[in-house]
Image (tube, rainbow, N blue to C red; front, side):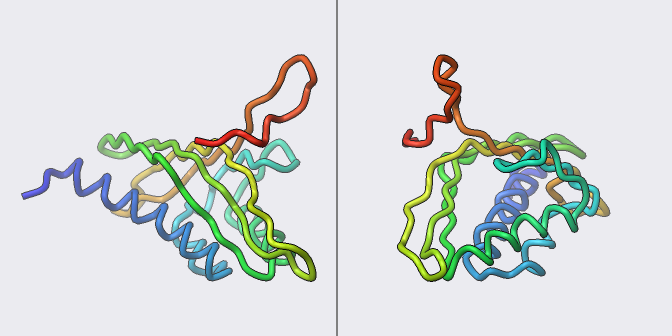
Length: 146
């Protein structure tokens, strides 16, 4: 029989699966189910932070306007769960066919998730996306592979 920690980790991984499925389906309502209403997001684009579910969904809606079809991959997800909070990190890549344009393979980014158990359900309360920086040139290193 699985332990509580194993069940929590499985639920958390399921929330990440909802993100992947929601992006591929371009489904904002599906995406909304994975996040807390007060999420704080440090996304790849400006501003420095977005606060609240509406701001987070607005960022995903922007992606959907740029892409005709969306693919999203997660690799090497690790999860550490406590009783009420958890965190995870992975590599993520958004790719697909741009509207009226070519197919893009995207770039791999680093993704960190913070979770809180809210009313018995694990929700993403914080996420952060980043690319490594070449300090000398000041440019992001977008060609790296996990």
